[in-house]
Length: 117
Image (cartoon, rainbow, N blue to C red; front, side, top):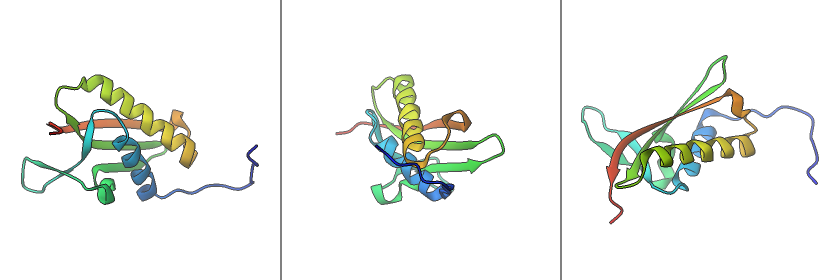
């Protein structure tokens, strides 16, 4: 049985971005996180060590806003994958970082489609 420890937990935006990125990569249909290249209309798939570049975290008085920039596999149902992705990220942030899901807003940006082959 877990023991409750008095105090508060402070989690940096970078850690939240890492948690969200790893949760996103575990979802079916997600090929990778995307980084918008400056001055170009193309995106780059980020390596696993740099996932946070594809995640934007903003704290406001209303709560926490997390924007995920992803590359999805061609042919998947984008709506289903996006719903699954938002659910997985919410669950991960709630369980690991103890963030109240009612104060969490997840936005999914599909930046590109790519085949896995």
